[in-house]
Structures are given as C-alpha cells and as structure tokens.
Length: 291
Image 1: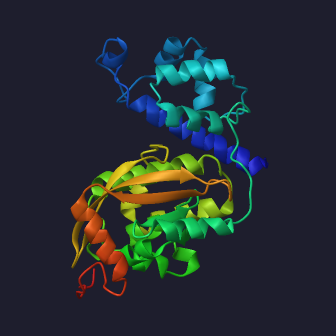
Image 2 (image 1 turned 90 degrees about the horizontal axis):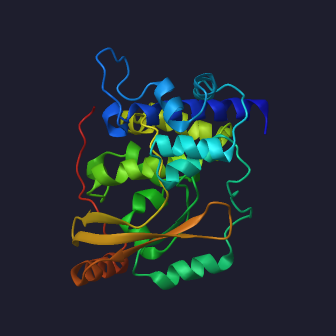
C-alpha cells in the first residue's frame, strides 16, 4: 500500500469513528447526559472508558495517526459504538487488519454470465461491480432502464444515472428508501479502494454533480448488498413491485448479479409486457424547464 493510500485510509477511519460516536447518546449507554456537552453524542474519553482502552490511544486513532491496532481492541470499540456487521467489517478494513477477508481476484466476466442473465428474462437482471458500474444486463433490465444501458461506458453507472437524472425521468418510485442504501453500499466498497484514483474521482465528480449524493455520502453510512423491496412505475405498464436479490460472482472482484423478482402476479405480468416491448419508454415524454 502506498503512503498516499495509507493516509487516505486513516483519514477515512477517523471520519467514520467520529460519525459513529456522534450518533450514540450518553443515555443509550447508561451515562448521565450532562449540561455542558459540545458534541451530540459520546465524548472520546467516554468511548475509551467504555471500550477499556487508553484515552490518548483512542484520540490518536480517531485523529488518523499511524498507530497499531488489534482485533481485540477494535472488537471492543465496535461493541461500544454498536456497529452492525457491515459497519464492523468496514472498520476492520479501514484499520488494515489482515484478519478481514480480501476480495477475490479475477479478470472480466465469464461468458456463462450473459447466458444466465438471458435465461432469467423476463425477470430484470444486471451485473454491477463494487462501484455500481453496469457490466452486463438482460433484455428486461434494458427495457426498464434504457437510459442506464444506453449511456456511454464512462457514465454507464446506476448511481450516476439515478443521482444526475431528474427523478421524473427514471422509473424508480421509492428513491427515499433505496438511494441511502445504495450510497451506504458504495461507501463500504470505497473502504476497500481508498487512494485509488478511479474511486476517488467517481465520488468527487458525482458529489459535485449531485448535492443529494454529497449529503448522503457525508453521512458515512455503510451497508452490504442484500435483498430489498424495489418499486418501479412504467408509464404504460403501471406499478411493478419486486424484491432484488444480490448474488456474488467469482470474477471480476466484487462483481455481483442483481435479480429483480416480481412479488405478485400483477407485477409478473407487467414485467413480462415491459420485456416484450423494449421500444416503449418507461417514462412519459415531457419538456423540462431550465433549472
């Protein structure tokens, strides 16, 4: 790891620890609230006391100083900060602990992947990498998200298209619930790629393009890919309710296949119609006024 990558990782670790400490109230861990608090959550010395570590050591850790950490100490800090599994894994990676499993290596997509995608039609299915770049898709996904799959390779990215495109021009209906989860999943992946120009540039440019993304990114939330309810409204087919399932692939590293399964017969019929009519735009045509 280069010196730049190490500095970036420790800076991310410091920001993450502060954000997790700020969200825990003293009352939640059995401490008196006090009347002269300058922070919304726990103080550094309180975290150190509850975790059983030295105040100076924890302060240095939260300041991003180059100090040694152990699994046992980070376990104690994780319990004190009430981190869930995804957050705990994120913390270990930021601390560069060798006990955290490394992502498998690999090259491009295996040829069988596209065959599997095609066999899943009319269920929409797509392959993302850890940054939500769209690597492959089937006909149903392309019919539901034509703007994504027709974008140039540089912006053929689900997050980019969702945050940069006006909400009226995308079929997703539950943006408020879904977007924070997607950003949290990206943040977890970002922890494995600190200091890498492609990741740094993606976050920097998307933050500049979308204040909404910048706000969610600043929350430092992390999550793993998983099954979630996703709803889409097609201008002709109507509302489609699905459950997304994320399946890890052996290669390339961090690639996953996401399959959207209809939750009821009505949604199943509508998805089949959308897949059979890819020429029909999922959103109604309208003229935008200048911002």
